[in-house]
Length: 255
Length: 169
Image (cartoon, rainbow over all chains, first blue to last red; front, side):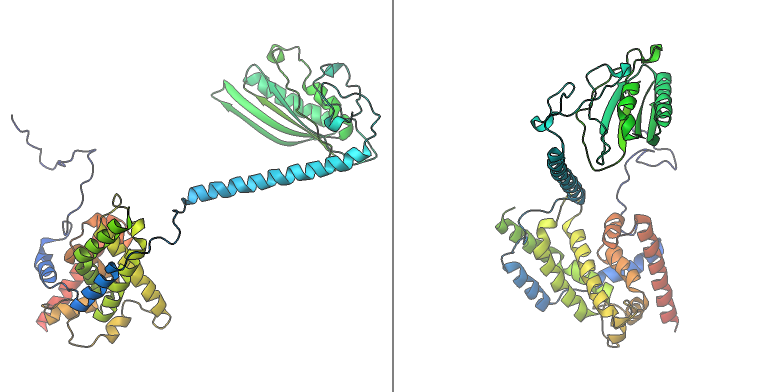
């Protein structure tokens, strides 16, 4: 077997080879070798007393870690802390929601009528309002605006449109609709990937009197091809809280 | 790991690396008495923390040197309230003419070592006396390998310059 000779100047480990450990004094000039050998030859040695002292330490049975379990890494601790914080928020939200529900249920007349498309919460029917021709589907929440108390409607709407152009048009139309109804756009999160896929999340705030109109208009079928295959998922529920404004959150995704 | 195995491991590590840890601490502190105290403290800590030792990350000698360094730095911090310069306070207390850094060292080299800073002496101890490789020494010192090499080169240059000046005088 013939051995290939390494060209002059080329690393024996190759260009992408792993770096080998640097030996002692490898990077130091040879003129220090005499100095180094003198230092090594006369290195300090532990005294007998110190040896006995350390040996007596070793003779004692090690106590081991005070806490038998190893502490998790910092990432896990942070994750657990975040989860605990989130859980506390959720618990607080559920508690406050139940309390506000209890308070409000005492205010809602028990003789009111129909709740569209679902079972009234707590066995108490909520008053419905006409939604107009744009919202014929029974998917919309039908909590009626009530001027005698502070209200907040929180609805989530998810639409699927054909392509990015439809996504842009849909988002623009939702914002225009919000403004025309006297509301404003809380936030817009619009992103596309490669010009083919994308998504937009809009937080729209409209006056409580126009919430039903807004939901109806947002789910109305558009004659354009872009919106022809739109789908609307009904909000899972509406909450009545102590707030004057109504908020509609519309998510348009998967162009 | 069972307790008996752990005790045996610690005893073996202490027997094998006691001189290394002691030599490193002598170079770092520049004082034999302090180095002995810190050596004993280092092995006492090692006994408590042996469960943290991970042989995949470094060898026992490197780990013990890291522990010795943190023990010494804790000691220095405690003393720093009294003295500003941690590298020189023990040298001021060292008795003149006493062999600190080795039994057979020439007085010139002994004095030259005493004139180095603690940082320079410890890199000399790790790379030259203990013959740790650059990676291990850098791990102990908490610096990069290239910084470790640079520091060693400067320390040795300074040492040789001091020795040459001492011989000439």
